[in-house]
Image (tube, rainbow, N blue to C red):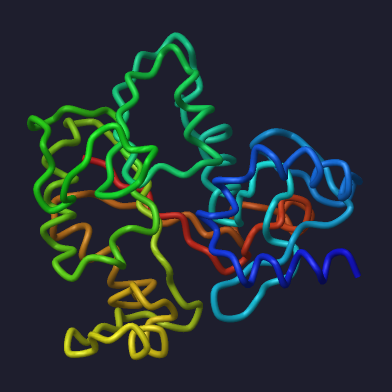
Length: 258
């Protein structure tokens, strides 16, 4: 019953609003849902259940009661912990974080070995404001970049990709997550679809302009200059891990390198 009530609340209020009030809600959430079935790898908290969440249709057991992380956030964190040197305090890194997520922002900001820059048009967490298609940074400014669930909002995504390539230094790497459908290989976009209602029907959200294809998204990144790697959750994690961390087994983690 209590979980259903939270589901209704989550359906009414957008996630940014929930994040804004999270400092008051999260201690209560941790207490109410404490257990051992699921673990949020970001803060190592464990729960008997996770919260439901979804823009059009709610998904069960996806929103962490402690960090408000979703499946894609926990996947990114696990990659950073297991397959990168991102958390190595002896390795100094300049990092660009586009549209910084609340579950990462305070944790990345505390890491002394990172020269951490946040960027967005509107986010209150962004230190630098601007247009992703014309980044206000010198060539090769960053060792690492994160740009997650941003490109699907931009019609001229090719310009944004080229800008990300320009500001990443040779040898640098990044993660660029976007929404993809499990059964869709080619990107679906139609720029004549412009109203919020039509975009919600066609692209799943009123401010999205495409669904990326699981194959040609990487081709687009390569055209911008990047070399790419696709990490498939179903191959990189065991069924036990997918269940414990509440990951999406159909998700692909896109890694870019210059």
